[in-house]
Image (cartoon, rainbow, N blue to C red; front, side, top):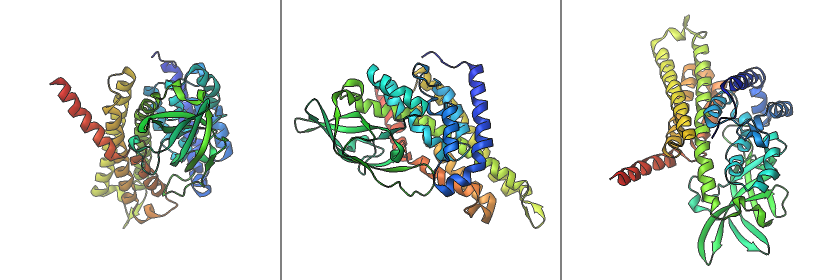
Amino acid sequence: MTQQVSADEFADVLDQVRQFVRKEVVPREREIADSDAIPDDLRAMARKMGLFGYAIDQEWGGLGLDLVQEVELAMELGYTSLAFRSMFGTNNGIAGQVLVNFGTDSQKATWLERIASGEVVASFALTESGAGSNPAGLRTKAVRAGDGWAITGEKRFITNAPLADVFMVFARVADDGDDGQIAVFLVPGDAAGLTIGPHDRKMGQEGAWTADVHLDDVRVPDDALVGGAVEVGYRAAMTSLAKGRVHIAALAVGQAQRALDESVAYAATATQGGTEIGDFQLVQAMLADQQVGVLAGRSLVRDTALRYVSGEDRRVGPSAAKLYCTEMAGRVADLAVQVHGGSGYMRESTVERIYRDVRLLRLYEGTSEIQRLIIGSNLLRQKRRDS
């Protein structure tokens, strides 16, 4: 794939996003958390900057960043409230990429420009109560109904569901009584039979709305089948999730960097018994462990993105980066609370919010346990092939 944005152009984009995040979003993190919503003016500014379409090709009105560039952007977006990035994350990521990589020309023409502009919010409806990290347990069904399809099932924890204008709904297509194949359908948010539950109350990431999605005999035309073929579904899910894992790893690095910066600033000013706590060697050791984790995570993310773009590794690398970086962010956040002491446990503390927010990173786009299974099984499979 030819890079659509030059190094000089991207440097300007990255600088603009960095300034926007630190000057406009960071000062309003408490407002976002307390209101459990992204302010309308920040949403409008994000749209104007093109953030709803940074990973969508320029042909469709996006910025056209490749994954090497995207992870640099994600590390900047990860420096602030993760709810802010979540607002446009599915448009660029697991939902939008389904259409970018697998949609028909007609489907792309109908949806991608509006997704890239932020006019349309797209949502990725895969997870169910019995099918989260492993889509093999999918129970939502799609059956032929006249010249289209009827979809029935329940989805859980669907990001941006209360705001979505279109859902990428994954469903099992029954075939002569067997389990059939997994397909993906474009379902408009106002489709008859589709209802959205109340938005979930979560441990963290206030402002990032998730909810259950109920589909009761939802009818869609035949051209709603993404890619025009049933067999596209499973491949679309796995491809979108693999790329998404690299993005999540980069977000984790951004959050870890913020936790480290907050820790250093606090250690350099807070005192205990008249001595700055940064002078205590055990505090310095905690800062050192945080820094090592951030540096290692950043290097891993960048290397993984390079190998993904080149096609060298789109399976093990994304899982390894997601596993390491999200676990690392959890450790760094925990150390940040420890450095802050009792004040770090207070709800008004930035590191308290980070501590809660990063916990989710080890769960979505495949849990840490699923990443370990992917890594281990693929290493063994490669060894057997080589033998």
